[in-house]
Length: 394
Image (cartoon, rainbow, N blue to C red; front, top):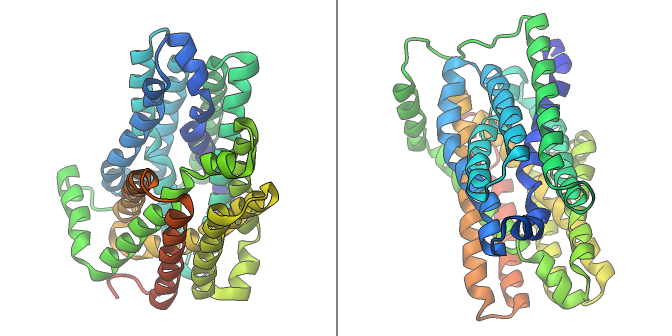
C-alpha cells in the first residue's frame, strides 16, 4: 500500500485535469460561436466530437495498458493532453479547434479508466471501493472546476487561457507522476505477456464478453448511464422552466450535483461501514429516483437545489459500487475490462440523452423524469441483489 499511497495523489491530479478538460467547453459555446462566427449548434462540436473520441478510444487504451503498463500509458496521455491544450489555446480556425478537441478526447480517454485499473491491480477488494472513491473525489472536483473555470475564463480572461492553464496543469501532473514512479521503482512496463500483440490483446478483451459476470456488469452500467444521465442533460432547462432560474444560476445549481458526489467520495469509508456495497447500491438508486421526481414535479428553486445534491450523492453511491465490480470482473485483463466499462457507460449516456430528447418533445417533463426514476430505483435494487466480491473467473 505504501507505493499506492505515495503515487495516488499524482494520479488523482492527472484525473482531475482530465475531467476538467472534459467539461471546460460546456460554458464556452456562446463565446466560441461569436468569435469564430459559427452557430451554437456547430460550436457544440467541441463537446460532441470530444465525447465520441473519448468513448471510442477506450477500447484501444485498455488492452494497450495491459500490454505496456497502465501508468506508462497514463503518463504519455498526460504529455499529449498538455501539448494539445497548448495548441488549442493558440488555434485561430474553428475546424482546427474541433480537430484538437478530438485528439484531446482520444488522449484523455486513457487516464481515468487505466488509473482505476491500476488501483485494482494494487489494492485488495476489501479496500478497493474506498480507494476508488478517493480517485472519484479528484474527478468530481475536476468536473466542477472545469465547468466553473471555463465560464470564468470566457467571461473575464478569454477562453484561450482556460486551455493554456489546463496545459500547464497536465504538464505539472505528468512530470510529477513520472518522477514519482521512477523514484519508487514502480512497474511501468508490461502488465501482461509481452509476446502478445496488441491485436491479440484487443481480441482477448472482446472475448471477455463471453463471461457472464462481465456481461452483467456492462449491461447494468449501460442502463445506469442511460437512466441517470439521460434526464440529467435536461435538468438545467428544467430548472429554468419550472423554477424560473437564470441560465447562470441554473448552471450554478447544477454544480450541486458534483457537491453531492464529493460528499460521498470524502466519506466513502463511513458510507461503506454503515451500508455495505449492497446498501450503497440500493440507496443510491433511491436517491437518484428522488432527485428525478423532485426535478420533475417540484416548483420551488430550493427543492431543485436539493434534488441536484441528492442526485449527485445517489449516483456516486451506485456508480462507485459498479466501478469496484468492474475492476474485479476480469482480473486477468483488468485494463481492458475497465475500458469496456467506461465505454459502455459512455454509450449508455449517449443513448439515454437521445431517447429522453425524443420523448421530451411529445410528453410532459414530469412523465419522462418519473419513468426514469422508476427505472433507476429498480436498477439499484437489482445491483444490490447481484453485487459480489468474486471475480468473473471464480
